[in-house]
Image 1 (cartoon, rainbow, N blue to C red):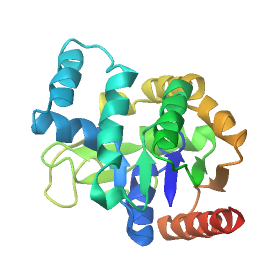
Image 2: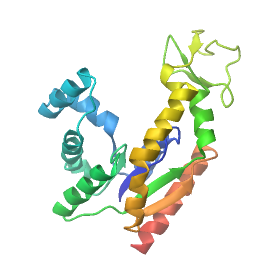
Image 3: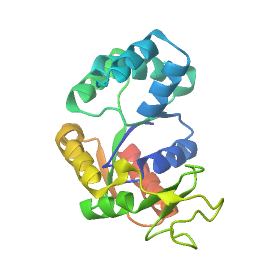
Image 4: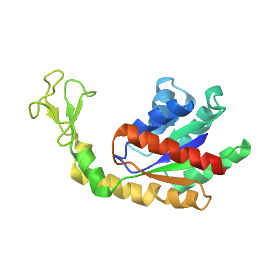
Amino acid sequence: MRIVLVGPPGAGKGTQAVRLAEKLRIPHISTGDLFRANISRQTELGKLAKSYMDAGNLVPDEVTIAMAKDRMEQPDAENGFLLDGFPRNVSQAEALDELLEGEGIKLDAVLDLEVPEEEVVKRIAGRRICRKDSSHVFHVTYSRPKVEGVCDVCGGELYQRDDDSEDTVRKRLEVYHTQTEPIIDYYKAQGLVVTISALGPVDEITRRALEALKREDATQ
């Protein structure tokens, strides 16, 4: 299957993308991974992207699209892929359609993870990260440390990242609503959107997504 995963920040896209790609035996292609891989390998696209990032500018759509195209042409993506973080806007979605059409293939589904806005704010603003090891993540509501402000694993100080503050989260949501959310209507017009609730246990959301994708695949 060829799938695009969409949803607001805090919807759990990264977690579900990894799980779904593994279950469906297709590569998980994320924008962040594309940038990191190209920059670390010092490809021409990576150098170009880094020049924009170092200058504090957004990487142009054409660079992101070129990276995605290169990745989707790799042998492991021959039978499908799951795109996470791309496309981010309607112009990227149009470019993706054009790219796939040129290869004689098309998307099978656009999986929309739906989460109420206040839940997104609660999820992200409640995160606390360990200063000693950022892989140790806690939450003031869902995964409280035994001692407030102290990492259970290594005893490091827990803190809230600047981009996890409530004001920043709400600004990120505004960007999502204005730039990314319109692609849902774009793909709805093509009959590709499958919307599921991203509330509940991680395993349950994965099961929900697989069932929805199976139904979508059966109607193709």
